[in-house]
Length: 314
Image (cartoon, rainbow, N blue to C red; front, side, top):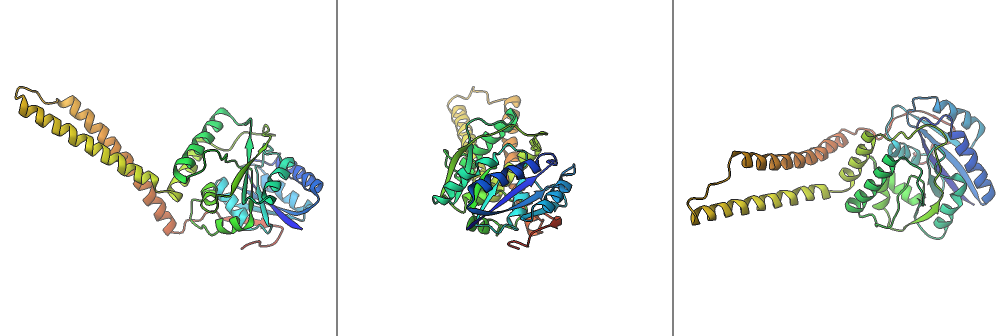
C-alpha cells in the first residue's frame, strides 16, 4: 500500500488547520487504498497556531509538528517539511481551507497515471485582486526565466513523487524556490482542475514585500537570464550612443552651421543612461549579495521545536 505525506505550511491558522486535517482524513478514508501522514510546519505564526498543532499531534499519531524559530516564508517552510516525509507521494496544500482537501484524489490519480508532479488548476480563483495579479506576474516570470511551459498552471496545491522531493532537499542554499526546484528536476508535469474556495478565516499572509522577495528568489537562484538581459540592454544603449554621436559628427562636418545638442538634452540622456547603469548594478549586486549569504551558510530555516513522528529523511 502506497503512503501519502501531506506537507502543510501554517501561518496564523490556529482557527483553520484542524478543519483542513479533518477534511483530508475523511477524503483519504474514502479512498481506502493509501496510508498517510501529516507534516505540519508552523512558520512562526503570531497567534497560537503551534498550540493548535500540538493538540492535533495528540489526536493524530500519524502527524509531525514543526515549529520554526522565525518567519522564513512559505517555501522555506515547505523545505523544512520535506525533510520529514516518508511517503512515496508528497502532497502540499494551504492551511486556510482554500485548497480543497476533499479533491486530493484528482491529484493522486494523475500521479498514479505516470506524472511526476501534478498541480491543481483553478477555473475561478478566490484570492484578492492583488494576489491574482501577483500570481499572473509570477507565472510570466517563471515562463521567461525558468522555461515553464506557458500552458502549465502553478499553484500551492500540488502532488509530487518522492524522488523529486529527494532531489529538492539536496538544495541547501538560503533562498529556496520550490517551483524552480521542481522545474529543474522534471518536465513530466500536468494540471488537474479543482475548486478554489474562500478562506475559512483571516487574510493572506503575502504582502508586497514577501511577493517581491519570492520573485527575487526565483530569478537569482535559478536563472542568469537577468544578467544576460542587462548585458543586452547595455550593448543596445552603447550602440545607440555610438550611432547618435556618429550622426552628429557627420552632420557637423557636412554643415558647419549646425548647433550641437544643448545642456538639457545632454543631461536627460545622461540620466537615462545613469539609471540603466544603476539598475544593472543593482541586479549584479543582488546576485553577489545572495552568493555571499550562501557562502556564509545562511540557513533556509531553523527548527525551534518538533513533536511527533520520526526523523523522516534527515
